[in-house]
Image (cartoon, rainbow, N blue to C red; front, side, top):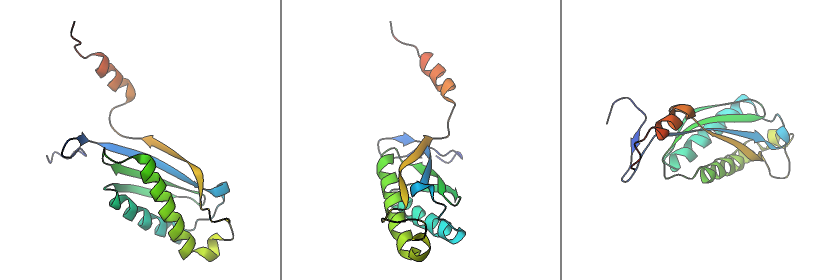
Length: 138
């Protein structure tokens, strides 16, 4: 199936799942620099690959990052998020300890909260209308 779409096939499922994730630093401290964000992107690409996901886009500012992730229907987003935040925190605090310790303390890089929004596909109103228009048996 090479029609240019993002639809992926598994043994028992067909999917086209995308998520927009946003992670914020603890206390919204502006701790990130360009090189730290570059390292963060590399770490998160590896974590995504380990889950069978693809990190399509990554960018950030001094206090947060945005990710656009394609993921298989078999992946639990909460587990992916937990791994992305945990692995990146360990690596970045190890590799950039001197810089990050000025902004963050207590062994925490990320806030406990995060944003996750599904992205792509048809608007909800179109899907709702499609569902309503199904021929329900009498």
